[in-house]
Amino acid sequence: MARFVLRDSEVLVHTAKLRKINIGHHDVLVYITSERVVIAGMVFKRVLKDIPYTAIDRVEDSMYPLIKMKKDASFDIIEKSGERTTLYNYIYGENIPYLMDLIANRGRLA
Image (cartoon, rainbow, N blue to C red; front, side, top):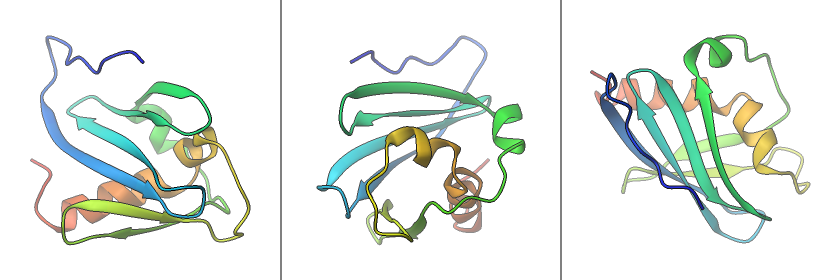
């Protein structure tokens, strides 16, 4: 899997761990920087995906998933439908703006 690397112009704001409880407890790391969100993890294959904030702003309502922040600063992803899905659906579902709101509300964003 590719390694997460900060670009020269960006600052790491927060790192979170997503735990997908309905499809086998695979952990997904989310790196939130001043310029982008990077999701890295192993679901059915290894993935490293960059999502610019401009793309996040265009995210529309989705059937995926519910996110709960845990006391250890990780997040549980609970699928509303209970069906299996891929990391792609998590990335482009409603969870990223919601995840960022959760972090902001706990004072984690600069």
